[in-house]
Image (cartoon, rainbow, N blue to C red; front, top):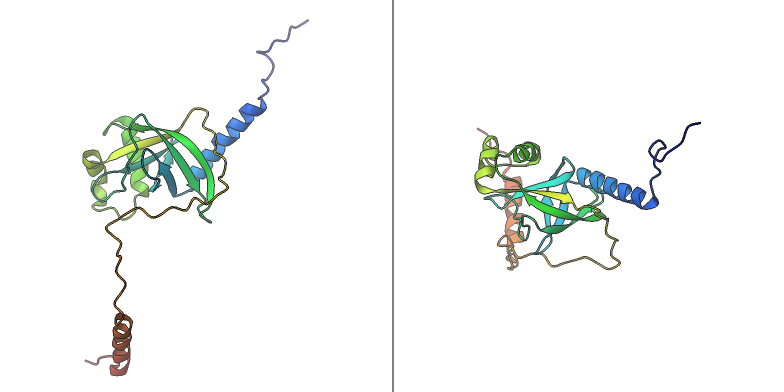
Length: 195
C-alpha cells in the first residue's frame, strides 16, 4: 500500500495565490501593450514612453533631448498607472521598485537594445547607445513583490499641466486669420505660375 504525501499530489493554489497571479499577468500584459505609462516617484506624475522586457518596465531619460525622470531614484518606489492603448483610459496601477542600471552592464545593454527599437525621432539614431551611456539614466521599474493592482479611484484624476517653456500665454493676434485668408485668396487668383 502506497502512502500518499503532500509532495506527490499536485498543490492546489489558494484563492489569494490565484488573485496574485492574475494581478501579475494583468500588470505584465497591460504594460507590455501600452506605449505610455504614468509614473509618480517623489515628484509629480509624468507620462513616460517605455518598453517591457524581462518582467519589468524600462525607461530612459534625463539626458539632452530625452524625457525627464524627476523623482525617480535608485532604490525608491514609484506608482505606475497603465492606460489602454486604444481608449486611453486607466487599466491598472501598480507599485514598482526603481533600480538604475549601470551603463554598459549586461542588463543595461539588454535594456538599451530594446529601448533603442522603440525610440522615435532619435537624433543621431546610430549613436543612441553611446549618448545614453554618457548622458542618460536607464531605469528598471519592477513590480514590487506582491504588487497588487490598486483600486480605481471614484473621483477625477484631472490635474493641471506641468509648467513648460513650450507654452504661450498670449492670444494669437486678431489680424492673423485675416492675413492668412488674404494670402490663400491671392494665390488662388494668380493661378499657377507658368515658365
